[in-house]
Image (cartoon, rainbow, N blue to C red):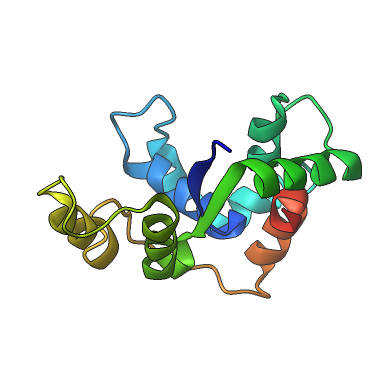
Length: 155
């Protein structure tokens, strides 16, 4: 059975990172330097009554801005992940990479001489990261985002 693998980040952590990334990513179409002047609390307070379930929308090919997500959609998305995707978690990166290695039969002595360097760069050194202040669970921003990302969090 064919499978894909994916690394998943907690939806709130993903969204907070996106907020900060858009402030600095001048090379991206989503670049919004003005966000640096808007406190994160104010930014998400304005959006607290909206929904934006990116992962479920992608899995089900729905427009995340216009198509409502239902409990049935959530169950369908869970079924897709369970049957088609080997899931890893960014919060458990080493374990996830080991899981992928074991499943696909990838070994450290394989044909890719760059593999150890790649692992070191992305797992240990986190070269593909954007440092920022975390949002604490239970904070006002966390609560706003829990509503906005409700179904993605359930996924």
